Length: 291
Image 1: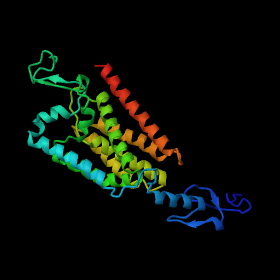
Image 2 (image 1 turned 135 degrees about the vertical axis):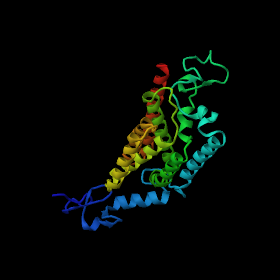
Image 3 (image 1 turned 120 degrees about the vertical axis):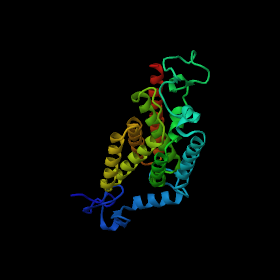
Image 4 (image 1 turned 90 degrees about the horizontal axis):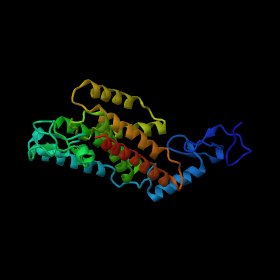
């Protein structure tokens, strides 16, 4: 028979909702859901006093501030593109992601033989910034509206549980993961832009958080099904960026959520993020080597 971890002589059929150790009636402390043991109650009080989030980050005073900042940058870039020609803007040529550059009007011409101002650089031509800038560029109003709405809905929830620094690390890792997938899987001359890769990564991270807490996945499952249908059913949508960002979100969120609790949790999380960053960097360097 299970016995209380603090009173070995007492039979117990109740477990702490936080650490899952068996506890007797004398050790049961009321919690938001079920009961917790005295140790977990003390640990939770300590974390509350220190302003820590569920997964070790500093608790933000305003969990929506970072998302608002990301939205502001995206909207600013969208306005700059709209005011300089929309889809024909030279800014799009500069910041959209493409694996290889090309010469207008003749794709076969090299950069050296291309007329002045006619060559549009790609990642393998030295435009390395595109793996980042493409995630903040939009042309269509509908495209940016849906992406910004998703950031506004998902961002504050994730920042509340991860903290600002971890949330930003998650966001940018998902963005770069989507870019790495585009470099390898998309048509090499096709320009790709938009925050969708990062948004799909946030959706994946929320899925991991719900799984960890034992929540209901049905609503998220429906949302995922709808988004997957849109990704593959409509033309000119980068399924490569979407799936790459989603995969990155799953990995990064799992590292943050399932890192062992305790004093070394931050070290595990940082180490995992560095490892993911190195894998993405190696994938991009390998793409350079194939050019």
